[in-house]
Length: 503
Image (cartoon, rainbow, N blue to C red; front, side):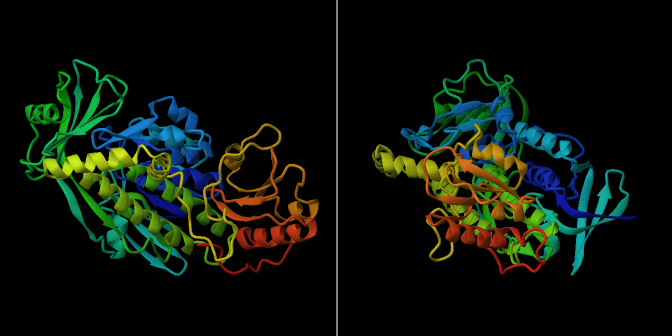
C-alpha cells in the first residue's frame, strides 16, 4: 500500500511537531511518524529560552506554555557567576523552566488543530529517493509494513536517526561526559530556587535539580570517580551521595519512580540536506546539556525549514531557497556545539586551583554590563543572526524585534498568519500598487512609532531585507524587487522566479 503527501516528518518530538504545525498552517499536507505509541515523561529538556518563546509567540502558543512553568530571570554558572536575562530586549526576558512534555503538548495540539496527521506506533525503517519524491518504508506496531511517498522527507528522529543512517551520512564527534545519572524523585524539603545546579569545590561531583511542577523532581548527577557503562543500574544512594557532595544536601530525596544512566555526545552531521531529504534537531546535531540549548536549537531548525518548504511547495519560493536551510542552520549548530561544550568543560573542570581561577575570572566578567548582555543574548538565542549579502542593510539577517504596529497589534501577532510581513513607517504606508501584487503571501503593516526604515520580515521572524530609502518612488521600486526576490512573482505575473534569496 502506498499513500502520498507533500511532506513526511519522522519523529514527533518538539522539532517534528513544530514543523508539522507550520506546514499544516501553510496548507501543506503532512504526516508525522512516531515509533512510540504513547507519551513518555523521560524528558531531558526543561529550559525554553527567550528566542524559542518568541517563535512560539509568533504561532500563538507561547502564553499557554508559559503558564505551565516557572520563569527564571538569572542563571548561575560556575557557582557564583550570574547571567541576568532581565536585560534581554524581549517580551520573554527569562528562561522558562517546564518539562519537555509540556512543550510537546502545546506543539502537538497546534499541529493537530491545523490538520497535521500524527501517527503513533509507526516506525520508519528505510527510504529511497528519486528526482520526484521519496519513498519511506514504515512498520506498524503490529509488524505490518507499508510505504509512504512524499515530495520531501524530514528526519527529526533523534540522535539514532534512521533517516540519517538511510542517507549514509556520518555523524562525527565524540562523547564529552559519560555515566550521567538521571532520576525522578520526591523531596522531603523543597530547594530554595527553581534551578539548583552546582559542582563541588574539587570538581568531582555535579548535581542538578529541577521541578516537574507536580511534586516530582528530575535529578541529574555525575561522579568523576565512578563512571560505569550506561547499562549499569543506578542506585538511589549513589545519586543521594553525589547530590550531597555537589549541593550540600540531598533535600531528603526518596521514592524514585525511574533511574537510569546516559552519556552526552557532541556531534554534527556535515550536511543538513541530501536531495529531497532534510535533517533537523538531534538527528542533525547533538550537544552537551549545559546551557539547555539542544531542544531550543532544534525547535528553531524547524522554524527555519518550515516556511521554506511551504513556499517551495506552494510555488512561491525563489530558486535555491531550500539550500539556505543548511547554509543558515549548520553554522548555528556548530556554534551551539562550541558554547555548550565550553560551558560543560568549565563546569567539570578538574583541580581546585583551576576552578578557583575560573570562578574569579567569570565573576569579574559578568559584572560588566556589555559582557552580561552578550552572554545573555548568546544563551537565549536573541542575538542569533544569519549571514547577509555584502552591502545589505545592517538589519538584514538579524532577529526582528516584536515592535508595536498601528491598530494596537504587535509584529509577532501579525506573523501568526505564517506570511512575510512588510513593515513600513506609519506615516508612509506602502502604495496600493505594491501591496496588490503580493497580498496573497505578504501581510502589510505600519509601525506605531517614528521610523524611516522599511523592513521585510520573514515568517520565522528574521529580517529578509530592509531599506532606509527616503524617496517614495525609489523606495517602492526597491520594495517590489525585494518582494519578487523573496516571495516569487506577483499575482498575475509570469511564474519565472528570480535567482536565489539569502543565505
